Amino acid sequence: MDEPAGPDVLHGSVLRAVPTAPADFDTIFRVEFPRVARTVHHIVGDRRQADEVTQDAFLELLRHWPKVSTYERPDLWVRRVAIRKAQRERHRSWRRGELERVTVEPAAAEPSTPAPEVLRAVRELGPKQRAIVVLFYFEDRPMTEIAEIVGCSESTGWSQLHNARKRLAETLGEEVTDDVR
Amino acid sequence: MSVDDQLRVAFETTDESWEPETEVALRDVVARHRRGVLLRRGAVAGVVAAAVAAGVVLLGGGPVSDDTAPDPLTPPSSPAPSFGRTVLQGRWLTEAVDETALRQAMTAAGDGAYADAVIDQLPSTPFRLLWVVDRGTAQLEAVTVAGREETVLDQTSILVGGDEVTIAPRFGEGSNIHTFAVDGDQLRLTFVSTTEPAQSGIPGGVWQRLLYDGFELTRE
Image (cartoon, each protein chain N blue to C red):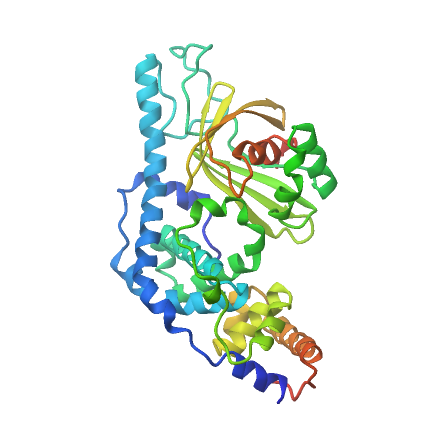
C-alpha cells in the first residue's frame, strides 16, 4: 500500500490557491467518515478522541488528495492513517487542547454495545491486535485488507488474531473455538 | 458462548450517531486545511513586510543552497529572515532519551515541577527526538529506539533570521523564538520567548525548553 506522502507534499500546498475541498473529496468524506469514526471509536474507546483522530486522518487525506485520489483504494489509505493515529493516540496529547472543538458528554464517550465487558477486554489488547480484532469482527474485512491497513503480512495478521482470541478467551473465561479462517 | 460469538455480539451495534456529525466534521477539516495554508502564506507576507520595513533583501521564497554565499546587499548584522532552505534544513536527531534524561533536562531548565505531567503526555521512553526541517515547515517526532515507530509531537511553520528561529504551531495560537547554534553536524536551540498559551496547565515554554532545547541534535 502507498505510504502517506511526506513533507514535500505539505510544502507544495503553499504554491496553490487557498483550497476548498475538491468535490470527490467531499464524496469520499461523506461516505467514509462515519465508518472510519466508528472503527476508531472501537479502537480508542473514547468518542472525542475518535472524532479527533478521524478528522486528523481526513485532514491528511485532503493534504495529499491530488496524489491519493489516484490510488485504487483511497478509503484504505485513510483507514490506515486513522488506525495508526489511533494506535498512538494516548501519546499525542500535548497539543490536544488546541484542536479541541466540542465537549462530548461523558455518557457518550464509549461505543454502545450489548457486551461492554467484551469491548473492555478488546481494549486491553496491544495496539496491533486490537486493530486487527476490530477490523475483523466489526468491519468484517478480509485478512488481505486488514494486513494492508495495519501494515503487516497476511500470515502475521492471522497469527496476531489467533493470539488475540486466546488472550480474550482467558480474560473472558472462555475457551477458544476453531480457527476463524 | 464462544469468544468469536461474544465478539460478534459485542460489535453488532452500528452507532449511527456519527452520520449527523459528518457535515460539521467536513467543514472543520476543510477549515483546518485552509488555516494551515493561510498560516504559511501569512508567514510569507510577514517576511515581506518585515523586509520592506527594514530595507533589506528578502532571501526566502525559493530554494537557497546551503553553501550560497551571503548576499552582499544583506547587512551581516541583520540578515533577512528566511523561510527557504536555511542552515537548519534537514533531519536532526537526538540521542536516545529515557525518563531520567527527561527529568534531568526539565530540572535543569527550572521546569521540574511539570515533569510528571509532561512525561505522562509523551510516548513511552526511550525515544529519540527527530526534528525534520523542510524550508518553512518543520515537524518534531518522537521515534522509538526499537522499531523506529514515530509519534508526531509538533507540526509547525518556521522562520529563520540570523541566529533566531521562530517556531509557530500550524494549528494553534502563538509562536516561539529560539536562538540556535550549528557546530558542524551539531545543533543546539536555546529558548528565548513564547506567546503560546498553556496546554492542560503546562506553559508553552515548558514544552519548548524540553523538546527543542533539552537535547543536542545531530544531523542525520
